[in-house]
Length: 330
View 1 (cartoon, rainbow, N blue to C red):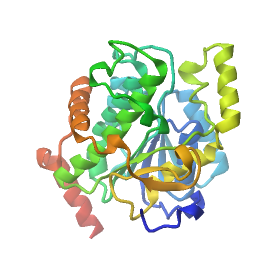
View 2: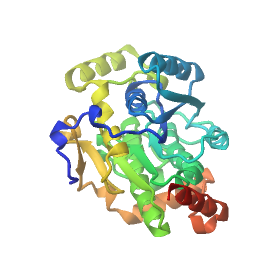
View 3: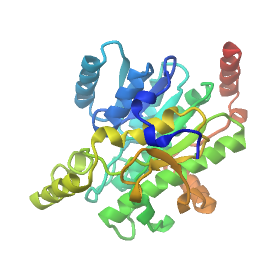
View 4: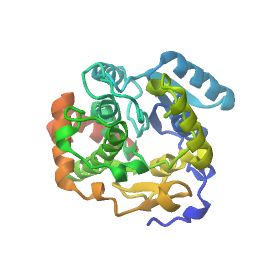
C-alpha cells in the first residue's frame, strides 16, 4: 500500500500536471471524458483519441467550454483497426509522451469482427491496446518518467482464460469474451512492467479497475441496436448498482498521477467487489502473477498485430532520444 490516506482521495488532489503530455483513448464520453478533463484541469496537454471524429469534436468543444485555458488536442483513433492505430502513431508530432491511458473499449457486445478479422472484444480491448502502446513506445520512452495506465474491469476475475479460444474461434459467449479481454488487459499491463524492468527503462505500467460506473459502454456503440429487453436490463442494473461516472475515473487518475506508485500496481475501488470506494492498490489477482500465460499472450499478440516491442538497445535512435531528453532535464 502506498503512503496516502486513500479514504480522502479525490480528483482535486491531483498533483500539478503542467509540462506533461497525455493521451486518453475513448475520451469523448464517460470515464474517458472525465479522465481527460481532470488531467487537463491539472495542467496537462491532453490528446483525446476518439474513434468517431464528430463525437470527438463535440467532446473537445464541451471541454473547452468547461476549461477555457486547457491545453487540448484531438486525434482520430479506431482501436478496431490496426491501420488506424498505425496512422495515429505515425501522425504523432507532440514530442515525448508522458502518459498513455488505455481507456477505450467495448463491453458485452454481440459477436462481430474487426476490420482485421478479430473478434471485436478481444480485438479492440486487448489487441488494439497492445498495438497502440507498442506503436507509441518510442515517444513514451523519450519522456523522463513515462506511465501507461490500462483500464480493465472487476469482471476479469470471473474469466476462465483460454489461449486456445482468444478469438471466439471455438465457442463464443458475450460475457465470457468480454471478461477474457479484460483479463488480457491485466496480463498485458503487468507483462509490460516486466518488459520495462528487463530493458531497464523507467516506464511504469499500471492496471486501473473503475468499478461499476454510469457510462454508455453497455448501451452505446455496438450495443446501441440491441433490443428493448437489453436496454431495460441495463437501465435497471445501472440504477441499482452504478456509481456516478466521475467516480469511475478515480482509479485511472490515481494510477496516472500518484507520484510514488510502483509500476505493476493494480488500482481498484476499496469497497466490496471493487465496485465502489476511493482507489487503493490491491493484490491477489491471479492474472497479475501468472507470468507463463502473460508471456504466451504477449508473443501471440505480437504475431497477430505485427507490433514488436523493442528496448532502447534494439533501437539506436530511441536510445539517442532518451539520452537527449535526460541531458535536457539535467
